[in-house]
Image (cartoon, rainbow, N blue to C red):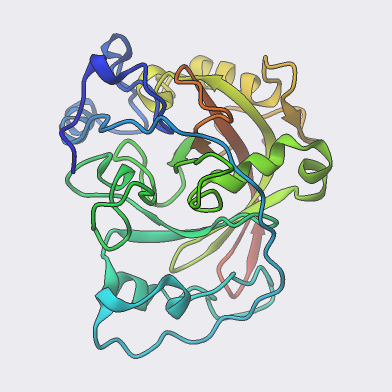
Length: 301
C-alpha cells in the first residue's frame, strides 16, 4: 500500500475527500476515547486523479448456493454471487457470505445499484481506513481498489450517515465500468427517475434505500468534518442532501429527512471529468429492511 499522505495530497482527486480538514473529528455515536483510538488507525491514503464513466445496465439474475471452498483466494466474485435478488418474499439470503468471508474476512456487506454495474462487496479494514483505496478484495495492490467504509462507521448501517467509497475512471479507460464509475448514470435525469432504489445486504438482512439525490459536493471528508452526534449539525446536513446547492443536482421525491429518524448511505466517488476539489455522491435513505422472514418499513417520526 502506498504511504498515506497528509495535506500535500489534499488537492488530488479521491472518492474519500480531505480527512485532515482543520483536524475536526466526528463523534458518530462513539465514546470520545474509542473514537480517537479508531480514527488514529487510518488516515487518507493515496489519491486517485481520474474520473468519469460510461453506463452498463445489468439484467435479470439468479444466485446459486455458496460453492465448496478449496482455494478461496482463487475465487472470482461471480463464483459466490451474481446480481442479487431483491425479492422480499424469499427466505434465503441471495449473497453467499460464507464464501465471501472465507475469501476475505473484511467483507461484511454487499451493495447493489440496479441499472448500473455496481454489484460489489463492501469491506472495512481493521487496520487502515483507506487500505481498500488501492487494494482489491483479495488484499492485493490494485488501482481499482474496492468498495469500502471507514472505521468511523459501524457495520450495521445504524449510523445516521454511512459513507461508502469507490473509484471512478475516464470513459475511454478500459476500467471505465469498474468500481463506482457507472454511478454517473444518475447524472441523466431520466435514468435517475427510473432507478429510485439501491440495496445493501448483510448476512442477516437486506436494506432498501430510496435515492434522495445525486449531486456534486466539495471535497471535505464527510465523517471527519461534521459532528453528526449534534442533532443540529445532522439536521443541517440532511437538509443539504435533500436540497443540494448544485444547479444540475438530481433530486427524488423525498422532501424532508428528520435527524434521529433517517439513516442515509452516501456512495462517494470522483467527479466526471475529474476535479480534485469536488466529489460526486449518490445518497439514499433507508426505507425498509428485510430479514428474509419479515419486512419492517422505516418511517419518519
